[in-house]
Each structure stands twice: as C-alpha cells, then as structure tokens.
Amino acid sequence: MIVAILGIDRVNFRTFDLNLLRVLDGMLAMRNTTRVGESIGLSQPAVSSALRRLRDVLNDPLFVRQGQVLVPTDFALSLQEPVRSALNNLESALSGGGDFDPAHISRNFVIGASDFFHEMLMPRLAGIVSMQAPNVRLKLLAAETETFGAMLTANRFDMALSIGVDTPAWVERSPAFRASNSVVARRGHKLLGSLQRRDTVPLDLFCGLPQVIFSVTEEFTHFEDAALSRIGRARHVQMSVPGYYGVGRIVAQTDLIGVLPTRFALSVADKLGLEIFRLPFEMPLVEMFLYWRSRDTTSLEQGWLRSLVLDLLSPLDEVHFPIHPDDRGPPRGAVVAPIPG
Image 1 (cartoon, one colour):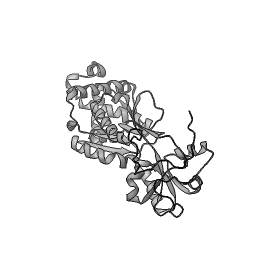
Image 2 (cartoon, helix red, strand yellow):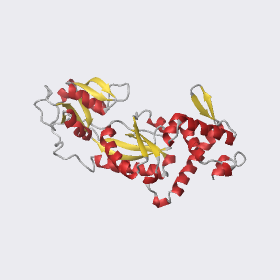
Image 3 (cartoon, rainbow, N blue to C red):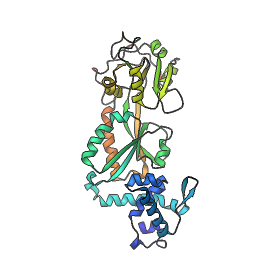
Image 4 (spheres, one colour):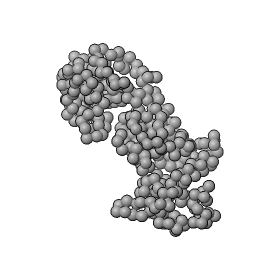
C-alpha cells in the first residue's frame, strides 16, 4: 500500500526510511516545522533535515514558501489522506489489535478546551495518564468555538471540547456531558447578604448588578443574555474575560457578580471565597461534545485518549448525575424563559 502511495517510479521502497512518513504526515497537516517537531518529539532542525531527505527521495519540492507560509505542491497534497490512512493501519497492525497497551505510546497530545477543563478534567486525566502511559505528554490549548474547526484542520489539536457547533463532514463528535450554570458572588456581598446559599437571586437584582462574564468573542454577551432576552430583560455586563477562573477571581475581589458552570463553581468556591446562588430564570442545560478528525477515528492511540476523556467527564452530566441537594437546592421563584422549539 505504501509503495502505491509514494509511486514506485518515484522512490526505491527498499531504502526508503519509513520514519520520514511521520514527518510528511505532520507537515501536510501543520505546515510548520516547529509544531511538527513538538508533535512527534523531534527538534525543528531534525524536521527540516527530514524534509530535505523527503524532497530528494521523492524528487519533488513538496512545500514551497509563500511569504511566511509553506504551501504544499499538488503531489504533496495527493499524499495527505493516503499517508494518514497508511500510518493508522500500521499503528493498528503493530499494536496487535486487541493487545493495545498505552504504556507503549510515546507522543504528544493536544486538547483544545476552555479553562473549565483545567479544573474539571486535567488533574484526574494527568494522574491516570502518568500511570498508564508515562511517555505521553498532554497539552491543553484554548479553543474558541468559532475557530476550533480550523485548528483541527491545521492539526493544532488532536481533539477539542466545545459546545455543539456546526462542523465539516470530516469532523466526528461524541456527547460529553450536560451542565447547568449558577450565579456566583463574593462572600459577604453587601447586596446579597440576606440570601442563603442555593437561594435564587431576585431577577431585578440580577439584572441591575454589574457583572463579569466569560466570553472569547468581542461581544459582551453569553448564553444567559439570550435567555434574558426571551423574557424581555437584559443585564449590566461591565467586564468580559476569556476564562472561567478569571470570572471567579474577579468576583471574589469585587462587588461584581458572575455566572459559572455550577460544578465548576462548587469546585472553586472554597478556594476563592464564593457564594453560589440560583439563576432567576430557567436555562437549558449546556451540552458539551468531544470533537476529532474522522481520519483519526481508527487510531488506537487517539481512541484510547478519547475514551479516557469521555469516561472522566461522564460524571459531570447533570441528567444522569444530578447535583446533590446539599450542594444546590430545588428551584425557588425562578422566572421561566421559554426555549425555542
């Protein structure tokens, strides 16, 4: 199969170094020698050297520089999917099928995700990976909803965690969990002092208090604003930051209030000195998904990590694992915001 991919007239397969295929695969996906080196454990000069060898062996420039960008030739592009498929097949064959052992993996994985997962996933994931696959390195990169598809295309991520969005046909996804949001305020907030933990913040008070929100866009809006709009209300957003922990830190040190995923808020409340209250309107649970490239579906290495991530996140699903009443009580006095059909 690999002979057919490379073209028998272009290469002496007997002397071809199959390790070069990993470099070619990485370059076709990332088009950046530094990032390719980071993904397969080589230095940037080693990747450049491998690329020169590939050009000589295949008798094709493979990548041509246009300004600051390396652009693949037509021949290089024709190799992208066949090379990736061949590497996946080799990985499967060499792993012995059902005898796959993560202890033998030696590579880097990049997960695109918000800082919610710094708190709710990475500590447990790090502990398991360090035991099961000590030669695996993990990197979490910020994943903006609007751009993570492009970053999957460019091989910046091996997988990404995000809300439900439209994706190309070559992207697969699996449900991860469904989660609620809650209001957070610093302990001793002068206008919320009469409320007990788990109480509902009055709607007028919620809309009137200055707020800090999580957002990775230029807009000063998030999910809650759409729900408020459906009942003819709006809130006073004074600040926007691209991290949930940043929302918590700001709330803890000011009179601004915020909205955080409930289990995230419960996890950081004692560390930051936060009180947690109910929203004064109903919102649908936020659905989170794990996304990956279709071509990586058969990869045993990636399949192992995807399964591990989904298993660790499944207890966050509030449909199957509701938040305990001791953590958050039943709704009281909530205004129902109709959800579009």
